[in-house]
Image (tube, rainbow, N blue to C red):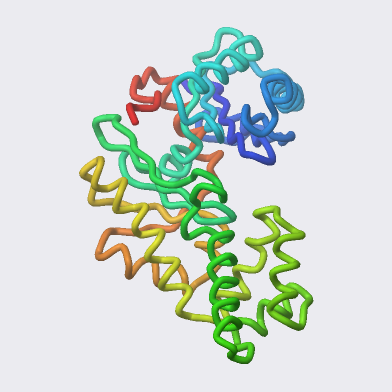
Length: 294
């Protein structure tokens, strides 16, 4: 007999919910972020209430939420405490949001590599042990991210300027994208618009103008994967995800080369699909849902 289940993909900017029964999607709803980091406990609770109300407060048997910022057991339990009153009688679990990408790819063990505005590598072994590398935000890390690409490109342009050389292809491309005429205009633009998303928006132009940046970016991302693979003794697969990584063919090709033979697959299904798959397993009594030891 099929069970009514709920999958939640809780990101830093929005929350997506999917109601499913017997593999059939019954309804979907979205709301603002329910991330504890982005919205705080009260904001997260309000967003969860809204998205579940839009679904008609369904009597689900099981629910799994992949939540940004739920990197620790403490935060996962805090999220469960917010969800339980909203889902009376349901089995509720909270996992690292990268786990949804792995589940959506149909894998129980492997490594997820995400590169968009930020970057992270996260892995899970068959034993349930987990590990991560990166994902610490633009001030502390996010190597190989869209933000990192823009910063690296700007550094190359400024080094060129320091040597007294005329603006090259990379400089001209960034200046066109930023609306300036001189490398010093670029520094003013970046200091004025400090949001990581604004910097990451320059990554496409930078990668097109300087093909060598793709290899440098790929090396950083492959390093994150190698760290996780070493800790968990995993040889793959590596699920590639994130807007920049999947949206830049030259970068994806460079990453595949840098992974040195590890199997790499694209994340084709949405993360919320992974949440539903985990919820179906939870409803069936599958015990290995909860996050492992990092």
